[in-house]
Length: 421
Ligand SMILES: *Cc1c(COP(=O)(O)O)cnc(C)c1O
Image 1 (tube, protein in one colour):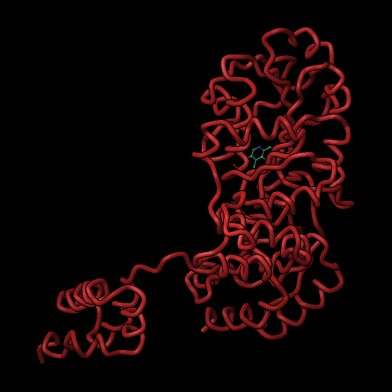
Image 2 (image 1 turned 90 degrees about the vertical axis):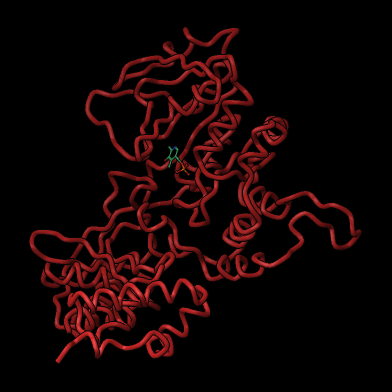
């Protein structure tokens, strides 16, 4: 029998519920094209005629897919860093339509864009006289440099010339914003006198960068915020993670409130690291300086959209974020969840070591629990629905529960069963 004869016709394939749903989402031409590719594969004998529907579904553009983060890395850059709280997701949904982002509904006049998010930031960090949200931490720093140090010097320690990731480096970012770097000290040791000798007429600001993705130990010295504040020049501190107040588990992670109280003029930070919100960059601090930054022409090129403003405000005003919940998770409870999951999927509950991740605290280990499975399941889990990303360690695939929302445990168990089958 000629197999090609039994290849299902286009209209038959398109009527399949999976593809009919895809037409709603992607339009008929795109789905038809995917069906055509699947039929061609069947004609070439690469797939059986009965596999055409499944193959067409695989060919469809998928968009971003949800992934259960069982890596034990709370802020996984490749998974989009912080997951948003339910409150922030609801706010995103509301803002997705037309909304009062720049309108005062009481008067009918123009409103200040993002005023609610700024107010929420200032309430969360009373030490900040002013606040501004831009696209990301890098934008916050670049805009600060462009406003305060274009054509002038930024005094920074050689121990804090950080590469953020994907080849992007803070010193190059600052130079691209039009500032000159005045490097002081050495990789391992920088003293107050090094800064003092460099600060002068030409100083735009002194910059302190939190080394958020590495640690230097041994014969080291760096200068505190309080000491740097005494130099007389404006002091900008890039704290990285967006922690607004101290956290007991993260004693070495700088926070906005403490840094400003210690005398920093400005703090810059990310919104989607330990703050647990959407991708954003925060500039917090002296009201008049923040206002100058807000009025810089480049601020318009770095402004955040209504979705970010909505999610940021909801994150700040809302209940505990998923990131914070993961950070504060009770180890005994993690163990109980791991044992329940292990029993449900014939895995083994094992102690594990979770981490904050690209977002900060590189040397902090968070005690955790995981379910250990055979290593070969890792790939099937990744390709499953929902996709699950675990951590492969010493020949096993570990599903660490610290970054998994407990409400997702049943979905995780189902995904493991599907991967096994
Ligand atoms: C993460 C980080 C940045 C970059 O922030 P993005 O929001 O990723 O642009 C800059 N500085 C420090 C110290 C960081 O930790």
